[in-house]
Structure formats: C-alpha cells, structure tokens
Length: 172
Image (cartoon, rainbow, N blue to C red; front, side):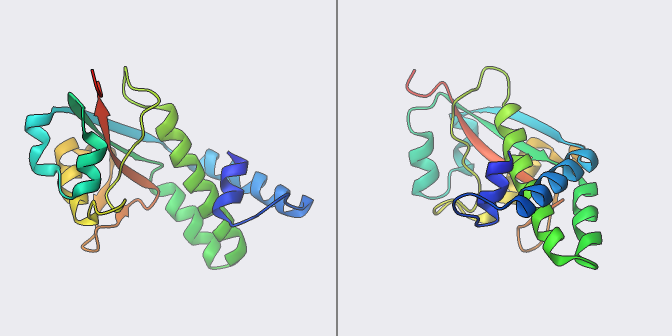
C-alpha cells in the first residue's frame, strides 16, 4: 500500500528515507482513523440497462450476465484528519490524502462482493461514463446506509469514497 501511496504522490524511483517515514506514518494515521464500510447490490443486465450511459461502460459490461454496484468509503473521519492537517502542514495533508486514496482502493480490492474476484471495477468518470451517474448509482445501492452522499458537482462525500460497476459472470 505504501508503494501505491508513493505513486499517487508522483514519486518515481526509490523514495528517500525521510519521505518513506512520512508516508509510513501517514498511512498508520489513516488506518487508525478510517472506518471503512461498503455496500453492494446486484442487478440483472435488464434491470441495469438504464444505467449504461456511454460506450466505455457498455464495452466493460459486454458479455456479462449481470452487474454488481459497489459503494465503499473510509468514512468522514479521514476527511477530518486531512482537513485538520491542511491548516497546519499542507505537505502532510497531501501525503495523508495519497495514503487514503491507496487505502480505499486496497479496501475495494480486498472486499469485493462474494463470488467476485479479479474483475476490473469501473466508476463514473472513467472514459465516457459520466460523473453525473454518481447520484443514480448511490441511490441504487442505498449508499446513504454507509454515510455516502453526493454533491451537485457529482463528487462524493466523504471524499475517500468509491462507486463502481462490476460485471458478473462475464462470458459465461
């Protein structure tokens, strides 16, 4: 996960010892304050048809027998920790943000719904799948149960949250 956080920070090659210590410390902080939660709902392709907007999501789901919609979050406490640090140490806040991004991605990879593994998640904002789909996906999966909301800009709150569309039984 540290390697992924370094990638988010734009570190190329080997990081120096001071950077590694800062990233490691920030990762521990994020893990300590995070309250990861996820929720998933499965749909038949027929029931999901109105959510297929754009060619990229259509191609992603080609050959699938169904769809899982996943919503996951690290919780508002991570946003608060990043915000608290922005007021006093912007560099640390940026590292916390990168660590949180790496943690939510790892959490999603490790907490895929039952029976799903090795399948690429596809989220609003990827390719031509519009961010404007966020509210509809959140509603479909009932993400308010885990505290995720969406702004008018279609960005998620808490910020370290993810929605994803996952093909089921592809090319069965």
